[in-house]
Image (cartoon, rainbow, N blue to C red; front, top):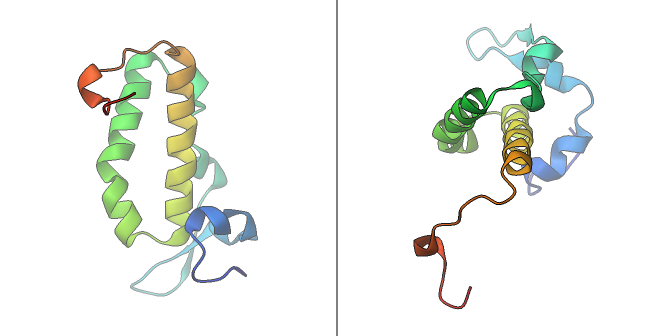
Length: 107
């Protein structure tokens, strides 16, 4: 990784040079190879509505722990996957119902 420590993981994502295929085992400090297909997950377009919602719930449930404690590569993967799933959800529900109680005055 070549970016500044002050950069966010989103800013550093493009700077990883294949290192994302290796995570360090904290116990042995040995590199553990991660299959690239495992990182990508199922294409959100192939998920049924119930599966898409389940995946979104899972990502949102683990969000804070990932943000606070995961390696930069894991956080970047989490950000990417969340964006993919949320984009798919919004494409399926462009006219989603907005709860008026969630709006601020003047919106």
